Image 1 (cartoon, rainbow, N blue to C red):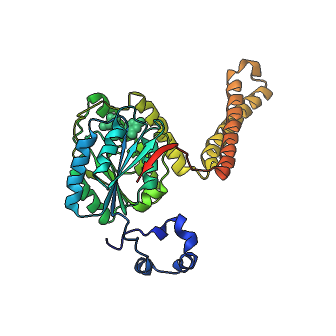
Image 2 (tube, protein in one colour; image 1 turned 30 degrees about the vertical axis):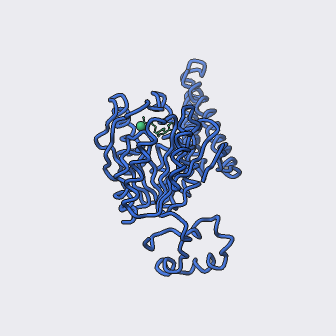
Image 3 (cartoon, rainbow, N blue to C red; image 1 turned 90 degrees about the horizontal axis):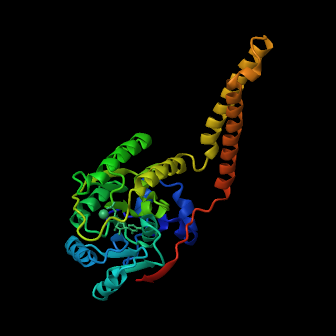
Length: 352
Ligand code: UDP
Ligand code: MG
């Protein structure tokens, strides 16, 4: 691999074993830094493909076949990480059968269904490749896109997101999704068209530093962008779902909206919640004071009695709500200081 290959010593976990290098590195130019990077040990794969899956028994054999035929031709060392997100069908048995004849396969099996984000998060944690590709298990993503995605990463992007330009999904899904992508683009300023495409490629550092939970997988490009990674996109083929049905109902849109708020909040204001709450809270208090101050002056001048002025209540409301918003910001600051980001998922089996 090229000198873009991230070395394990880049990871904070490896830092304690190499303290002298770590100290030295602060005084190096980027060029020197690259030259002196230790190369990953030979057994590390070049590429990890992570496939989160929930009840996809019909698709797995076909997907595995397609993946292998593409990856063999690429002539890279690779691993296939299947994360079984608590499937209740025969998905796990199918994977175990496949693994008997393919040493590339690793299976992580959750005790219960935690959701796609959790499956991706654990896959990210276990992946060892210098480049990591994620894709859905339902055959909607085309594995033949992997070489081009990898090329994009080698060209310098840290994250390349697939863009399902011609989407093979029902209108009830594509229309709201267009709206979502538009709003997300607007609010985050990241110029990509399809934030929630399952097919993405990442440089290793990205998957080791973004923390996703809940349903935040929709906003991985946003989280990565805010951590300073270079995010790009590439048009990819999309196929209709062949077997089974979608695992996300209409609830996705409402939760997606809330998750957008979370993404914005956690990326911009995570470390300084008071910057957000403090601003709006203070604004409300000032507005309330102005309104009530004006009414009080009028009352002094004898124009009218305060009991006749409903606006007075509005002023009081603004002051109280404002103080509460500021207090929430202060609480947020306290939590931000003591918070632990690690999420725990109960893994039932991890078969390497
Ligand atoms: N998935 C998962 N856990 C879940 C829901 C979905 O691992 O709780 C997987 C699913 O098996 C598929 C991918 O996430 O591999 C995308 O799901 P789906 O195809 O249902 O989403 P859609 O294409 O409808 O957006
Ligand atoms: Mg799908």
